[in-house]
Length: 191
Image: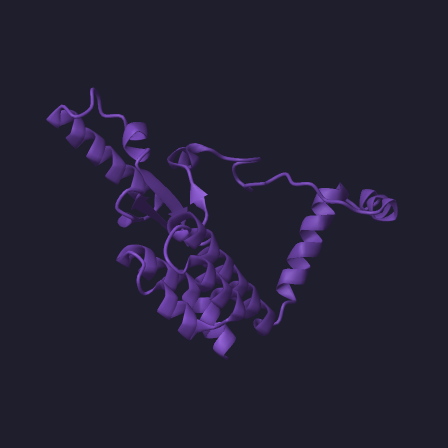
């Protein structure tokens, strides 16, 4: 499943484009070419246009850079990401003794745990990710809006009615995406 992104014009708090990162980049390229043709900028430079926008990963609600579409971390086929893990010496000893070493063993353990998750655990995880995505997006785009702090509290209290009431005065595109991102969380909380 292809990741989806939303680009918001910072000054107007309006969603300019929603789609794959390539679609967002193509939209910026079209703006840059148009501005260059009008003489507003010297040459069609996507980076100049992108300065006026924030791009959000709709799965996480976090901001991403336009440049991230060309960057890969780790081995390209696996998308391996290095992070720190803190364990006791006996855990490191056990991991080191496993076939393939610590990384292979940890990946297998995580995959086994994920495969054994109940549908309820998976739904709870998805709900938590939706809650976090809504919070990350709201923090970036609505942090200065009226009722932001109260809306955040309502989000973490699972109070959908209060949340919807508080975000109702926000700019339309910001409000709609906050509601859309938080929807799966509130749906899970209501069940």
